Amino acid sequence: MKPSYMLLLLWALPLLTAVSGQPNYIPDEPWVNVYRQGFNFQCRHGEVLVAIRSYFNEEEGSDRLWTFECQPTPDGLGEPTECWWDDINRAGMEWTSTCSNNGLVAGVQSQYFGAVLDREWQFYCCRYSRRCPYSCWKTNEVPEYYREEGEMVIPSYGYFIRGAQTTFSGVLRDRQWKYILCRMTDFDCEFENF
Image (cartoon, rainbow, N blue to C red; front, side, top):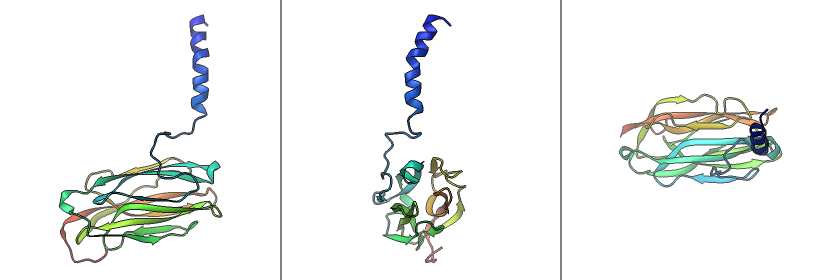
């Protein structure tokens, strides 16, 4: 090996060691929580969730760091006419929640429970006049496999998060999520909850 390559290798080796010892997440990410602590995140008035990201750490109580991104709703929806905290799940249990009164998810709160190494969840929902959801579907599992980094971004403008279905693995102490995405009508409708 030439001396110049050897010097380069000796220079780069400490950098490679430092990088390999770092957690697999962006340290400057604006996480809304610290491990094993509760959090309450709400979008600004007139905005809804459009992206969710999480990072799992077994050493930190099999918990996740979470971050959320919001975006203003289209002008055609108007302003939210009411907002509320919807159903809550119990730690260690499966859970399916869709915002009541045709609401859209505009926030999330969660509390960590060390006894079961899991969290309780609740969505903050906002209703826009009497608009109704249609063309609803569920995403694939997020994360694809337990204990992996999870990320869900609304795939197309005009879709909104209405809720989620989540399963909990008592063995792996982690959750997978399927988010319920819908479009909203451009007109008021008669249905109270859909």
